Image 1 (cartoon, rainbow, N blue to C red):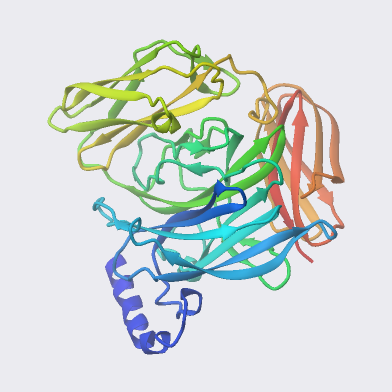
Image 2 (cartoon, rainbow, N blue to C red):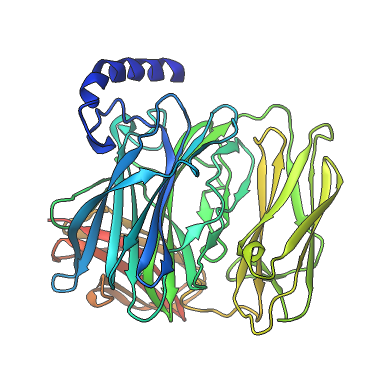
Length: 493
């Protein structure tokens, strides 16, 4: 069926390609030709020196049936403090970076391709928003409506300072797409920030539209619901480590987005929204992966991650073991993280048989070093169908309940509908009694609506609030007992 749909769309594309040849960029290419089978992507900005930056757009696809365009259009918005909104600034052309764009190895049942587009920019101090929109999504997606004509929208909010460098957060590992049905998946895109700013990750709804005339207002994919999961295996993400857990209970294609927020001195200074698609399929036989630490680690109950303490100037060693249940199948084990690109890089060496491996991470942190480092160990079967990650945080001090890093007592915050017109619905749960304050703030962090203030016992709650606010971007913020969680909310006329 999938092949029939692709052939049909290819015929439509061929019928309109003559017209498309007169157009200068992909944003005006006929929709059928734009059906790029986009699996996901993101926009990141890296500081090279001074006010010189490199902007990179990354696109992941599940096909090579249609050629990636050589040039794409990307919109730039700047924040207008007078109206507290991002307003349209300009549109620029970004060219494909041919040395980086590559055809990745086939991953059954899909062949995947990654496209990299880069451009050098000079950015004066300001708050920026970069937006790219591409049609169309995979028509086989099950957890949204009318996806065959739904766009993929990637956007990044980024701040340029007068007196300090800043690069946007990014993920070191490409999103993982193929997952086995009825088996818990543990994967980590591995969030990272070159400036050692704090990052926090959360799930968010994929975007399909945005206005580009004056201000940027985003619209979500129609009828989106979270990917189908087993009763105790809902898709979730650890806000601190970035680790995703998910037990899919039905085969098919599912979309999901997540947001990486960047904090400096306790203030949010930017964010990157990354789009992804999960392809859930059957696994032949009963193969399963096992990945566990040999070296004892500490576990934080309120943040739900493993960590290991290091002492600057002293050697650290960490051992981990990985295996596959089918002894006739080989596995590989690799380690990833910014720790491997430092001036004094870490090493990771594996030993053992092809189906039963152990690995040793060795690293000597430099004197005076105190940053928290996320390391992801990935075990992969030979056919790339089975993947399992183990996430370890290396810290110089034990973790504390930091507002910029944790959502210790507050979880499952949801706002709907989003965009909202005049009536806001909010649901959340708290894992222990908290003295809470729930409010809406504008993009400057100023409170514009108070939704609730008071004590909340442990449990789940729903709130309704009639609002009368100008159209724009806001945040719903929940604070309690030193923890904070927020989610973006768009108000429309």
